[in-house]
Image (cartoon, rainbow, N blue to C red; front, side, top):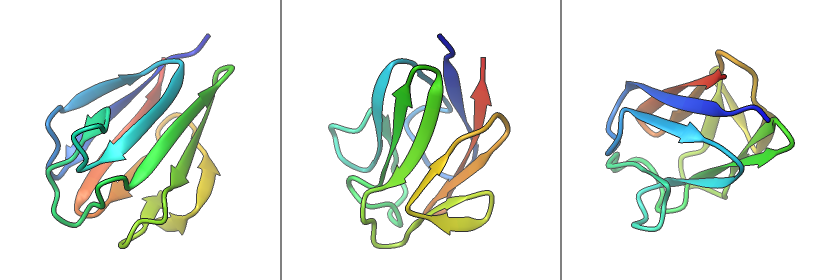
Length: 97
């Protein structure tokens, strides 16, 4: 089974790296978010990464400012190694292991 990692490139988050394993990962300002952002431009429950059998999908959770993958606004998209995810003013690099 593949694991993935989010690496903070730019912006505000409580952690600079986060390992994405099995299950879903919530990204946002909510205290319940696994990857908690301190970026005021991020929604409380902004986006999620869904992990299923080594495949990872980024889903926008009807955020106010949108979720961007490699510069394009998305609702849902499959993640690949090296993708850049932008939420508000925060950008992550998605890395597969």
